[in-house]
Image (tube, rainbow, N blue to C red; front, side, top):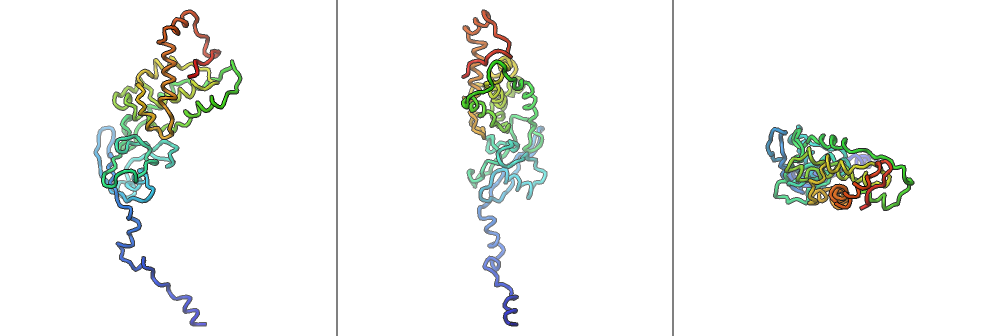
Length: 286
């Protein structure tokens, strides 16, 4: 019995991993290697690019690397994020010069021997490091009249009509489309042009079969839809794959052209003025 008890309490033999040198035991944690993150540090008055070395793990995204920089090197690094699942739109930044959601941008698609350059969005003032002041967007949003229910038709509508506007409801307001738009990014026409995100919002209202409001004058005069030259750069960066240019901006442009620049329509408006918006049918369903 004593021998049995002694056998049960005998320490287990050390495993090969436990007897290996410390350097060898650390190999699994670092076997994916290291990368360099080159991050903007500063504010709206200026700043500099600073390099940080980050350990890479399988499945890692740029936001993970930024969090590692905060944890190991720079706890004061300003980074916006919330859901880490591509749903909140908070972690927008420019990675290697392209607007992206950092929580959806995988590290393994970038060359391991080159720095990954992370900057704040160029179209908005920098608060600190990668955090931008995007409040201008919400001021623009207040200009757009809300949904107004039509009373001149039944409230039922087809699935095709529902699908058409549902695409625009997918917007998570990451403002990547605003950042990539050259009218805002390079020419700084924020006072004259609302940007792709709010043309998408207007499209979701204007194309709704039960909406009665008339936003065509607003598109022309205050939202500046004429500034857009349909380069489709906003569509390319949209994380929700909304066809911003083809399905939202171009149909809205056609409505503005029909109203203000089509000579036949202009003549008809003189001869037969438009009825009041609350009882008028929506313009041509393009």
